[in-house]
Image (cartoon, rainbow, N blue to C red):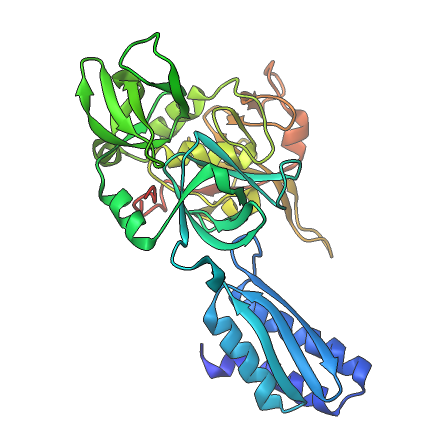
Length: 391
């Protein structure tokens, strides 16, 4: 980091050293916040949880960060201020107690990532079979993980196979198939009536171990093996090479999920929330969107929407919520995908994925959404399509 970026924190800490204790704590909080904004402005994708206590002349700084530079720069600012004896109790994640097993490969069709460890806690997102998560720390039978899109949350240990960096490399190098059907069943034998080994959903990844007639032999990340009907999967390398992020393909994939129920935190055909739907649609077209609606609203290019929506393109993302006005900041609470002729497809809360319209004369007119429309972003024109991280 450029040392010039720390001038403000250092100035604040110089003032802290001369201020009354109560004021010093207020200013110390502001300094920590400044460094946090540099390294972790969005707590959903970065860790910077810092607290402090005073013991006489000593300042004990403790907490967790996931970036060694964040710790280094924070401590440098505190030390240079010279306001007190500094005791460092900041832990850098991943937790060293995890050893070399710092990764997990998801072994069930859909793994639920929670905001707090516990099955009754809020579902924040989902990861599919074959996806790799980074392990940061453990609490009981739960691990704090970071998924391929950097999103953070808690995942039960039974949902993944723990492995090393070398294990991830081996998984990445293996020939794999990806589920392209909504749902599929891996069975013990290549027969329709054979007992199931696991269900799979669109986007699930498995090792490919050959074919047998209309069936593909597969191995799951935890070593279980079986057979899945060839019509439900496609060789991943071939699938990836065939991806074309076009308006037509976005519409085609989006309409595949019509009728899928809304599920807060969902990103699979078993249930999706609004941004989970848009993320899944784009992902199956080879492009990785950020997880939440307000994160997606920072991607792509802004579209200056006309009154009749005539300058929107199929595939543009539409954002809803509250427009910025006066002292109120913009607040994005919903996202959908524009189709054509004022129609858009989305996953409304408490319902199912459907097509609605901005046209008051249309039978599927959504007046409330028209009133809460904020802005649009164009992803397709701006996209430099990266390799989707399925490792």
